[in-house]
Picture 1: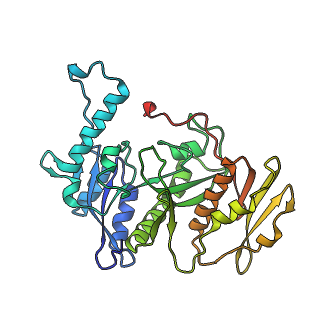
Picture 2: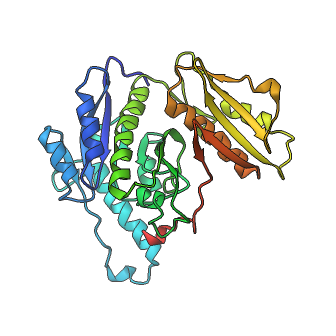
Picture 3: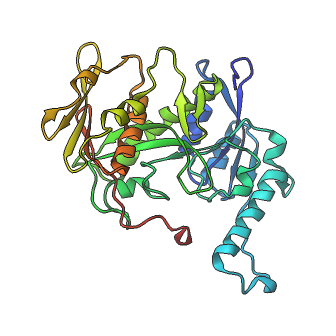
Length: 339
């Protein structure tokens, strides 16, 4: 979808303060960006995000979730009742509510969730196939709210305090925080970080990443690979990083420890792979990443490949420009019943 001569129309969902929304609104007025916010919707009628939209004369739509208490549903299981409540809310979002226009009438090119805390159902997604996007302040291995608390080890599902995290922009599917990744930007966690400092730095990364990705959509550079993975079609950008990694490790011994290193010199970023201290596959270690590749996309593709290799049983230490990207461990899988 190329919108260079006609701005990309966005419907934005938010539940809180709306700082990410504000960054998108601010950038929409700059000549370098080809998108506009045509409406803002929320499940929280009093949230500050709606006020931000109104300050810019952007139409708003507020539809709170209403509890189903009808006597004929008393025996309905809690999970099923919550699903019915969400679908009822979504119908009002789509078609309008309380004299407010619905999202379908605004006809957005994409629906963008920026701190929208209500779980989206398949009913809503079917109205905007492959057109619902979300920002998430963590790797997608952590699902749910509280991404920065998880990174610092404060969240109930955190195994330990991490020394890295990332912000993720991704497509939404029928699982929570689980859709195909568009871009991820890594961030180092220091010993001095607390919730406020990490959130401040993470939010700044989110602001930049969200608008950058939206501009890629406006320029038609976002493509699906086999309908499950996303590539960004940038000029002169080498793409087969994942295939490269998988081929390098084909036939390797899974009982050994490996280190995957992205190092930097004056001219190129270079990938090196070591098996218990010794470089393997020397003929492939001359693989270079062009310097014009955005740092966030280097990380996105390489982390995707590393995760695939780890899932295949390889013990891999991923060193990204000196940052140790260790595996993400959780105490338990995200449970929708706990939302």
